[in-house]
Image (cartoon, rainbow, N blue to C red; front, top):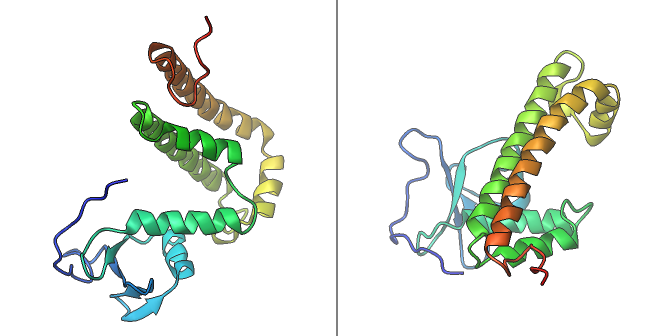
Length: 189
């Protein structure tokens, strides 16, 4: 996959507003936090993501933006070391979309579904204020909360599922227009 190279000039530690934290990746694969002047690990970067911090990862020599690559490494570690979020079948389907006309549509669909899911989670958090400390919502606490929220959950999930269904149907219709697209069954003759 081709990557875009940026100017070799070393960017400042943060942007002018002080919002974007810059991490440098060195050839020895170490990450350097320019804000704290220290080396950090992928686990530290994961914590930055969880905390909602804005950051970018730059190649120390070329200045190339490596943020996506680092985020994908974190996802790989998460998928390899525990309960994976994606099944083998799902990962295979995603791979089949690369390099085809539907790649952009698939990316947009996944992004919109993630946004809808985050909004759904925010609604749950708003409903649960005062019941639980959102900082301590573990999967077990979520399970307990959701088991007592059947009608509310059903209403919220109905909208989410409907949006996903409509988007998938659009993809299916597009697949019939372009036979042989990855992720769609071949046209029956």
